[in-house]
Length: 605
Image (tube, rainbow, N blue to C red; front, side):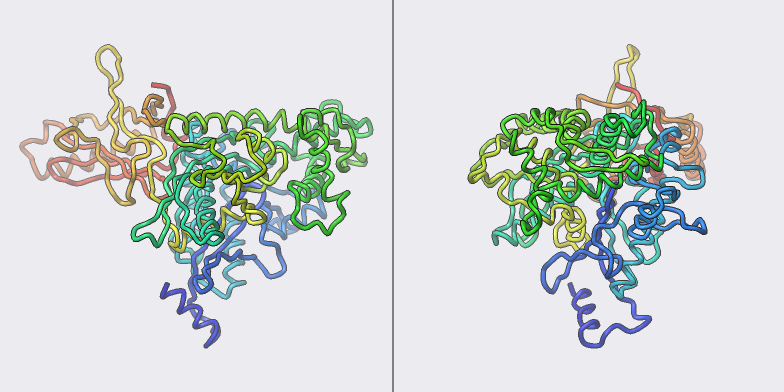
């Protein structure tokens, strides 16, 4: 607080001087289609969105391209060039591709050995963050909180070995000039922080209870149930993640299971029905094809203006409420829209003028979205039923449903969620505190609150971590150091323990063959991580170092093998470190588990 007041004093009294080191904290919503940035203003107790430049929008397109000199340009500048020349070499959806190892998927999206999703992400974040620093007359970011998809730490990500997404993102941000400290938090957790702040501003009361954040963006759907409670002394709010689920897995031909995949499917359906387009097999059309990209960009701009009912009714009702009116015509059974072949909008595909009908919108939604959203909602309510959480009472103020993200504004999404929870249009407190126009920026604004420590997170482990051994009959024995949803403190070592303290193991050959990850509340579902050679070599080197110290300290015992403890550490970005400690010398070797695809082979226990 003192640091921020000092900054305000410099700006309002003495003014900014060249060379002055002015600091800020920054929250970042790194989105698949759009990104946004925010900071907390302590003087007004408000969260402010940060524009890269005064003339640009707060919603920064998550896009990059090559200019005429083959330099990488990003954001608004890149979007303008791509719209002007669709043949430009461009890169999109790089966030969703950070953990992708399928070379074919990367190639079809235009990525190469030279231009990887990692490089494009680094250039995008570096350019946009430094624009914000320059635009704000600030030079240092003390604390940067950047948000990652919740899907990176769900059952699906564990099954695909995708747990290193947070490490990649944190490592990229740490390399940006002017950034001191970096923390990666989940997008729904940040949105929950903003909702707690918004609720307090609106009601004057501190939010307590459960919040179901449904974060639907361009690449992912994340559902996170958080518990919001008063912090120590009642002056702050703490957030605890209770459960999470979602979808967002890439498949050949499409990115994730959210807004991008949905709009690409609309283009395919519309082109298939247009004889003039001359496309025999729309499913084989590559998203990298310039005609496809032109059509997609055209559709995105048009559908974005009609994703939700606008609070500003000054525009043309025929244009702004075309989709709303079509939904109202079949509100009792939205599936009847399949028979509505009226034109919603037109797009260009090559030289053809293609009609996008209301039927295309609902058919694409049913194919790409409806089933996955319904399954995630059912998974979450099953958890809430088991945990005894009342989500059905419409007059209770202890449970709220909050929909955020760009695709979360889409009326089909909102309609499906409301139907699932039997939404009552009169006095339903579960939906009473709609974030309105700020829902698109809720993640960035929540991240800003977390960066400035206005709201804190009670960190709990998103999965259990331990080792596995087997009896003679191949029965697995599981030993956990960090249990599912155990509260964790950054910098604390958690050891595999028995009743008398950390368990002792004897190892004479420098091998730990299997680690273990569990991901449900009862610890019944588990994945066994078979260690690959890269990690095995790191473990062996750690043992050799410990053994040399042990042998030097106890030369008479050097032939007995290394008696050691095994444990883990998890930081606030949920990045895991393996710990190996020599019992007698009390020295510890630490191995950051940063590349899960390279280090592990996944099997079911």
